[in-house]
Image 1: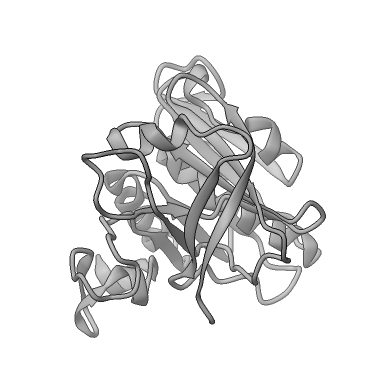
Image 2: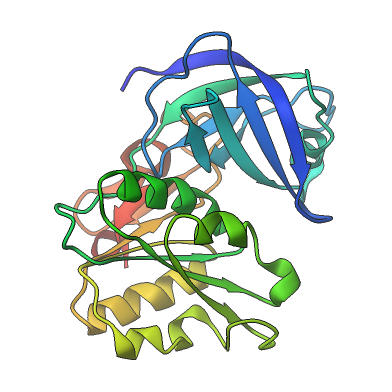
Length: 256
Protein backbone atom coordinates (compact mmCIF):
# COMPACT_ATOMS: atom_id res chain seq x y z
CA UNK A 1 0.00 0.00 0.00
CA UNK A 2 1.12 3.54 -0.70
CA UNK A 3 2.50 5.38 2.32
CA UNK A 4 1.85 9.02 3.15
CA UNK A 5 3.50 11.62 5.37
CA UNK A 6 0.70 13.96 6.42
CA UNK A 7 0.26 16.91 8.73
CA UNK A 8 -2.98 16.00 10.50
CA UNK A 9 -5.01 18.44 12.54
CA UNK A 10 -6.08 17.55 16.08
CA UNK A 11 -9.85 17.79 16.14
CA UNK A 12 -10.33 16.50 19.68
CA UNK A 13 -8.31 15.13 22.61
CA UNK A 14 -10.36 12.88 24.88
CA UNK A 15 -8.75 12.14 28.25
CA UNK A 16 -10.05 8.66 29.03
CA UNK A 17 -8.29 8.55 32.40
CA UNK A 18 -5.07 9.82 33.96
CA UNK A 19 -2.97 7.59 31.67
CA UNK A 20 -4.77 7.27 28.34
CA UNK A 21 -5.92 9.80 25.74
CA UNK A 22 -7.82 9.33 22.50
CA UNK A 23 -6.63 11.60 19.69
CA UNK A 24 -9.10 12.37 16.90
CA UNK A 25 -7.18 13.61 13.86
CA UNK A 26 -8.36 14.91 10.51
CA UNK A 27 -7.04 16.26 7.20
CA UNK A 28 -8.30 18.61 4.51
CA UNK A 29 -8.21 15.72 2.03
CA UNK A 30 -9.87 12.30 2.46
CA UNK A 31 -7.70 10.03 4.58
CA UNK A 32 -5.98 7.18 2.70
CA UNK A 33 -7.02 3.56 2.92
CA UNK A 34 -6.00 1.88 6.17
CA UNK A 35 -6.45 -1.74 7.25
CA UNK A 36 -7.22 -3.12 10.71
CA UNK A 37 -3.97 -3.98 12.49
CA UNK A 38 -1.83 -1.46 10.64
CA UNK A 39 -0.10 1.33 12.53
CA UNK A 40 1.24 4.85 12.13
CA UNK A 41 4.48 6.57 13.08
CA UNK A 42 4.00 9.97 14.71
CA UNK A 43 6.59 12.72 15.08
CA UNK A 44 6.77 14.12 18.59
CA UNK A 45 7.45 17.85 18.59
CA UNK A 46 8.36 19.83 21.68
CA UNK A 47 10.04 16.95 23.54
CA UNK A 48 13.84 17.46 23.73
CA UNK A 49 14.39 13.84 24.80
CA UNK A 50 12.32 12.30 21.97
CA UNK A 51 14.29 11.97 18.74
CA UNK A 52 12.47 9.14 16.99
CA UNK A 53 8.89 8.71 15.86
CA UNK A 54 6.49 6.69 17.98
CA UNK A 55 4.50 3.75 16.53
CA UNK A 56 0.81 3.78 17.43
CA UNK A 57 -1.90 1.33 16.41
CA UNK A 58 -4.82 2.54 14.32
CA UNK A 59 -7.73 2.54 16.74
CA UNK A 60 -10.39 3.62 14.27
CA UNK A 61 -10.94 5.30 10.92
CA UNK A 62 -14.15 7.33 10.89
CA UNK A 63 -14.91 7.88 7.20
CA UNK A 64 -18.05 9.89 7.90
CA UNK A 65 -16.07 12.57 9.74
CA UNK A 66 -12.75 11.91 7.95
CA UNK A 67 -11.02 11.13 11.24
CA UNK A 68 -8.16 8.89 12.33
CA UNK A 69 -8.34 7.84 15.98
CA UNK A 70 -5.24 6.95 18.00
CA UNK A 71 -5.39 5.56 21.55
CA UNK A 72 -2.22 6.69 23.34
CA UNK A 73 -0.79 5.42 26.64
CA UNK A 74 1.04 8.42 28.13
CA UNK A 75 3.90 6.59 29.84
CA UNK A 76 7.09 8.24 28.53
CA UNK A 77 8.28 11.70 27.58
CA UNK A 78 7.17 11.30 23.97
CA UNK A 79 3.71 9.90 24.59
CA UNK A 80 3.11 12.31 27.47
CA UNK A 81 3.79 15.13 25.02
CA UNK A 82 1.17 13.63 22.70
CA UNK A 83 -1.26 13.69 25.61
CA UNK A 84 -0.69 17.45 25.92
CA UNK A 85 -1.87 18.18 22.37
CA UNK A 86 -4.88 20.44 22.03
CA UNK A 87 -7.59 21.06 19.45
CA UNK A 88 -6.13 22.73 16.38
CA UNK A 89 -2.58 21.46 16.90
CA UNK A 90 -0.77 19.71 14.05
CA UNK A 91 0.63 16.17 14.28
CA UNK A 92 2.91 14.81 11.55
CA UNK A 93 2.08 11.17 10.80
CA UNK A 94 3.45 8.51 8.43
CA UNK A 95 0.74 6.02 7.45
CA UNK A 96 -0.40 3.36 6.86
CA UNK A 97 2.38 0.99 7.91
CA UNK A 98 2.69 -2.78 8.30
CA UNK A 99 0.34 -5.65 7.59
CA UNK A 100 -2.99 -6.11 9.31
CA UNK A 101 -5.30 -8.79 10.66
CA UNK A 102 -7.11 -11.38 8.57
CA UNK A 103 -10.80 -10.64 8.11
CA UNK A 104 -13.35 -13.49 8.19
CA UNK A 105 -13.69 -15.38 4.92
CA UNK A 106 -17.49 -15.34 5.27
CA UNK A 107 -20.18 -14.12 7.67
CA UNK A 108 -20.61 -17.57 9.20
CA UNK A 109 -17.14 -17.58 10.72
CA UNK A 110 -16.89 -16.79 14.42
CA UNK A 111 -14.02 -14.50 15.27
CA UNK A 112 -12.77 -13.84 18.82
CA UNK A 113 -10.82 -10.63 19.41
CA UNK A 114 -8.76 -10.73 22.63
CA UNK A 115 -7.15 -7.59 24.04
CA UNK A 116 -5.43 -6.38 27.18
CA UNK A 117 -4.37 -2.89 28.25
CA UNK A 118 -3.69 -0.50 25.37
CA UNK A 119 -3.55 -3.61 23.17
CA UNK A 120 -7.32 -3.32 22.81
CA UNK A 121 -6.75 -0.34 20.48
CA UNK A 122 -6.49 -2.05 17.06
CA UNK A 123 -9.29 -4.50 17.86
CA UNK A 124 -11.98 -1.82 17.68
CA UNK A 125 -11.25 -1.00 14.02
CA UNK A 126 -11.00 -4.72 13.24
CA UNK A 127 -14.38 -5.34 14.82
CA UNK A 128 -15.95 -2.42 12.98
CA UNK A 129 -14.71 -3.69 9.62
CA UNK A 130 -16.07 -7.14 10.43
CA UNK A 131 -19.44 -5.61 11.27
CA UNK A 132 -19.49 -3.77 7.93
CA UNK A 133 -18.98 -7.16 6.26
CA UNK A 134 -22.03 -8.51 8.07
CA UNK A 135 -20.11 -10.58 10.62
CA UNK A 136 -20.55 -10.21 14.39
CA UNK A 137 -17.26 -9.85 16.29
CA UNK A 138 -16.87 -11.14 19.84
CA UNK A 139 -14.52 -9.19 22.11
CA UNK A 140 -12.76 -10.56 25.17
CA UNK A 141 -11.08 -7.71 27.02
CA UNK A 142 -8.87 -7.95 30.09
CA UNK A 143 -7.68 -5.40 32.63
CA UNK A 144 -6.36 -5.20 36.17
CA UNK A 145 -9.60 -3.66 37.45
CA UNK A 146 -12.80 -2.02 36.22
CA UNK A 147 -11.19 1.44 36.22
CA UNK A 148 -8.52 0.19 33.80
CA UNK A 149 -10.99 -0.93 31.12
CA UNK A 150 -10.68 1.16 27.96
CA UNK A 151 -13.44 2.23 25.55
CA UNK A 152 -15.89 -0.34 26.89
CA UNK A 153 -18.93 1.45 25.41
CA UNK A 154 -17.30 1.77 21.99
CA UNK A 155 -16.72 -2.00 21.87
CA UNK A 156 -20.28 -2.75 23.00
CA UNK A 157 -21.58 -0.67 20.08
CA UNK A 158 -19.76 -3.00 17.66
CA UNK A 159 -20.26 -6.53 19.01
CA UNK A 160 -20.54 -8.81 21.99
CA UNK A 161 -18.15 -7.93 24.82
CA UNK A 162 -16.85 -10.21 27.58
CA UNK A 163 -14.65 -8.91 30.38
CA UNK A 164 -12.08 -10.24 32.81
CA UNK A 165 -10.44 -8.25 35.59
CA UNK A 166 -7.68 -9.50 37.83
CA UNK A 167 -9.44 -8.23 40.96
CA UNK A 168 -12.94 -9.30 39.87
CA UNK A 169 -14.32 -5.75 39.95
CA UNK A 170 -16.00 -6.28 36.57
CA UNK A 171 -16.73 -9.34 34.48
CA UNK A 172 -15.13 -12.63 35.46
CA UNK A 173 -12.17 -12.65 37.82
CA UNK A 174 -8.81 -13.69 36.39
CA UNK A 175 -6.97 -13.40 33.09
CA UNK A 176 -8.48 -13.49 29.60
CA UNK A 177 -7.49 -17.14 29.26
CA UNK A 178 -9.55 -17.94 32.38
CA UNK A 179 -12.84 -16.69 30.95
CA UNK A 180 -15.63 -19.25 30.63
CA UNK A 181 -16.27 -18.34 26.99
CA UNK A 182 -13.38 -20.63 26.02
CA UNK A 183 -15.43 -23.59 27.28
CA UNK A 184 -18.84 -22.37 26.15
CA UNK A 185 -18.13 -21.43 22.53
CA UNK A 186 -15.93 -22.35 19.61
CA UNK A 187 -14.33 -19.95 17.14
CA UNK A 188 -12.80 -20.12 13.66
CA UNK A 189 -10.11 -17.50 14.22
CA UNK A 190 -8.62 -15.62 17.17
CA UNK A 191 -6.91 -12.24 16.96
CA UNK A 192 -5.08 -10.81 19.95
CA UNK A 193 -3.07 -7.75 20.96
CA UNK A 194 -1.68 -6.78 24.34
CA UNK A 195 1.15 -7.67 26.72
CA UNK A 196 3.50 -10.34 25.38
CA UNK A 197 2.79 -12.85 28.14
CA UNK A 198 -0.94 -12.48 27.58
CA UNK A 199 -0.64 -13.05 23.84
CA UNK A 200 1.56 -16.12 24.35
CA UNK A 201 -1.03 -17.56 26.74
CA UNK A 202 -3.83 -16.87 24.25
CA UNK A 203 -1.76 -18.47 21.47
CA UNK A 204 -1.14 -21.60 23.58
CA UNK A 205 -4.82 -21.94 24.41
CA UNK A 206 -5.80 -21.39 20.78
CA UNK A 207 -3.37 -24.10 19.69
CA UNK A 208 -4.80 -26.53 22.24
CA UNK A 209 -8.23 -25.92 20.75
CA UNK A 210 -6.98 -26.18 17.18
CA UNK A 211 -7.93 -22.61 16.28
CA UNK A 212 -5.64 -20.34 14.21
CA UNK A 213 -4.40 -17.35 16.17
CA UNK A 214 -3.00 -14.04 14.96
CA UNK A 215 -0.95 -11.86 17.30
CA UNK A 216 -0.05 -8.18 16.92
CA UNK A 217 3.45 -7.61 18.24
CA UNK A 218 4.37 -4.38 19.99
CA UNK A 219 8.14 -4.31 19.40
CA UNK A 220 9.89 -0.96 19.41
CA UNK A 221 9.65 0.46 15.90
CA UNK A 222 11.56 3.69 15.28
CA UNK A 223 11.25 4.00 11.50
CA UNK A 224 8.32 1.79 10.48
CA UNK A 225 9.86 0.91 7.10
CA UNK A 226 12.50 -1.73 7.94
CA UNK A 227 15.53 0.57 7.92
CA UNK A 228 16.54 0.85 11.58
CA UNK A 229 16.29 -2.90 12.44
CA UNK A 230 15.28 -2.24 16.04
CA UNK A 231 12.06 -4.28 15.78
CA UNK A 232 13.57 -7.57 14.55
CA UNK A 233 11.75 -10.75 15.59
CA UNK A 234 12.79 -14.35 14.97
CA UNK A 235 10.36 -16.43 12.94
CA UNK A 236 10.31 -20.16 12.29
CA UNK A 237 10.05 -19.83 8.52
CA UNK A 238 12.17 -16.80 7.57
CA UNK A 239 14.55 -16.30 10.47
CA UNK A 240 14.86 -12.71 11.67
CA UNK A 241 12.36 -10.29 10.12
CA UNK A 242 11.35 -6.69 10.74
CA UNK A 243 8.07 -6.53 12.61
CA UNK A 244 7.23 -3.16 11.05
CA UNK A 245 7.25 -4.57 7.52
CA UNK A 246 6.45 -8.31 7.97
CA UNK A 247 3.99 -7.59 10.77
CA UNK A 248 3.01 -6.30 13.18
CA UNK A 249 0.41 -9.05 12.81
CA UNK A 250 1.73 -12.61 12.61
CA UNK A 251 0.24 -16.06 12.76
CA UNK A 252 1.32 -17.17 16.24
CA UNK A 253 2.68 -20.44 14.84
CA UNK A 254 5.36 -18.47 12.94
CA UNK A 255 6.98 -17.06 16.05
CA UNK A 256 6.06 -19.19 19.10
